[in-house]
Amino acid sequence: MLHRLSAIEIAEGALLADVAALFLLLTLYLPVVGGLFLVPVPALFAVLVLRRGLYVGVMGACVALFVVGVMTGSHLVVLALEAATGGLFLGWAMRHRLRHVPILLLGVSGLAVFNFVFFLFFFWLSGLPMADIHRQIHQLLVSAEGTAAFVAQHVGRGGWWEGSARPSLPPLFALLERRWAAFLLGYLWVSSWPVVIVAYYVTNSLVRALGYRVRAFPGERLERLIARAVRLFARHGRRLGLPVPGRART
Image (cartoon, rainbow, N blue to C red; front, top):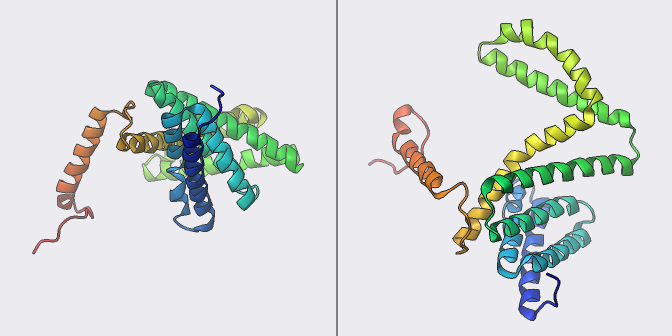
């Protein structure tokens, strides 16, 4: 709820906002490993929401966006807005102990709609013709066709691909190009799943490591199963000839 911020809320919000802005700037100025600094940014805003509430988190996000905008112009504003909004949503959802499926569905749908609206706004703002959208959709479909042909050849289904699957693609591509808005929104929705899953997993793991009692994602049982599978892989990987790191034998 809206209220007058206390001194400790202002201090914590400003501190975490500055750290988030620093990480976002590192993603721009570090050429190779800079993208890794984007991973913990949503967790910072999630922690702020868990500690001080959504209102303080929103104020901290506004400060971070202002700092990033002043330092870089418009280069990182959209990326910072996505990371900050995602962190605020995850913090609010974990604070209210929502289940994993609604969190993932809301996060994926929200990210897809945001990217779709920004894509259309960018084309409108730049004054590019609508033919460029159709051209990009066509290039995306051609790339998908090439990837599918490559996979089919390497799994021994090249004859089926050339004889049955590939001839049926032109009518489908024509339909998708006519319904490009629905296709683009669906494509963004599907491609948002790995982004949201990774962001949720990292944020959930970090806030639990800091001592916050939230629902474990993907779950304590599954986490123990994954850890056991990793240990088994590390133990038996050398027998399969895999490059598994371990202690050198003397």
